[in-house]
Amino acid sequence: MATGIKDKVAIIGMGCSKFGERWDMGAEDLIVEAFVECLKDAGIEKKDIQAAWFGTNNPELSIGTTAMPLSIALNLPNIPVTRVENACATGTEAFRGACYAVAAGVCDICLAQGVEKLKDTGYGGLPAAGGGTKLAMIAPNGTAPGNFAQLASAYRAKYKISRDDLKLAIANISWKSHENGAKNPKAHLRKPVSIETILNAPIIADPLGLYDCCGVSDGSACAIVTTPEIARDLGKKDFVSVKALQIAVSNGYETKYNEWQGDHFVTTDKAADRAYEESGIKNPRKEVSMMEVHDCFSITELVTMEDLKISSRGGAVKDVMDGFYNLDGGVPCQVDGGLKCFGHPIGASGLRMLYEMYLQLHGRAGERQLKDPKIGLTHNLGGAPFRNVCSISIIGKYTG
Image 1 (spheres, rainbow, N blue to C red):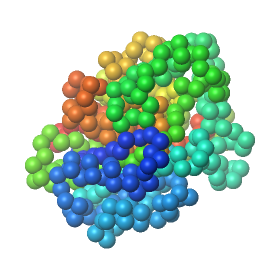
Image 2 (tube, rainbow, N blue to C red):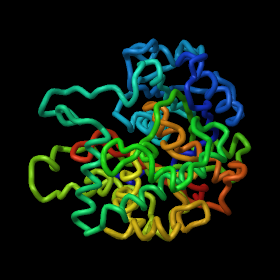
Image 3 (cartoon, rainbow, N blue to C red):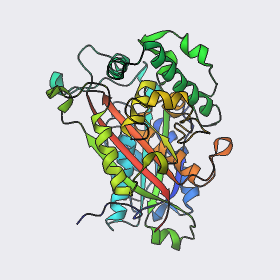
């Protein structure tokens, strides 16, 4: 009988490069930058790592289509290295592979690392999705801002929220994230932005303005994981463990039937239920201490707050305006600035989110440090509202 992954895997080290327009760095350089921090944090030697998972989304770039770039960049000792890709959940997919190997007893210590050099593509946004007209994650002739603007329209219609009220709520989400990102030396965008500036910015896809859309960045992040027993043998105290790892992938339901009203993410709703069951969380609004969610657009974050059962259906607008998700609120969201301030180097994002939760749980987040957090949740969403992949990770202080 499967019992899940709760408290079977300890995170003993994490690292993160600075995110931004890293023209002076190749993907391999970013890999090394994050790994050096991670290895030092773990307090082990490179030879102790028995297997690695490498997440990257863009094989067209210099890093190639195999897992060899990670092994070569880090000069790993000919250990198994697996390349994974799962849209915007790619970084979390690498983490899941490393954690499952440890939990299964196949390896003692594993590495998960993700990287992306999006600025090298030479244009804004993410690379275009393929898969044909029936399988494409983005509608023919559609754009990512356009698809997520439709999510905003559907949400407004279902809950009878005025355009002005919704635009003000998503502006507050963007404002909150920029306030947090200004406190983070590794963020790409570190300048606070006023509500007035956000509301008066050029419209990209109504109601989404310029500051409601995440930027384009380069970056890398990684984690070293082992068992709680080995963590203790290494002298680790009060370490962080994995409580849940869940991924849900769209089966086309959203476009096959007419029950879905376009106002939320089916995959997030289902992955959240499984993650809470695996972690033993009964009341996420009370038990989750902090979150990093996939704010590719600020409307995505607002809807996700409800899919994660933190806000009630239709209640996220009020919670946002009440400051519930601010740093001093009930469940701080985008504690490090989120995609809004880091951009979205696809392979790195999921691990970057976990890095912030890990720092917070260890009390090492500097001026953005929360008071005694216990549980951190991360969420990635790849694709479009009507077809996507969602990953949810829950980590916290070890209680086994």
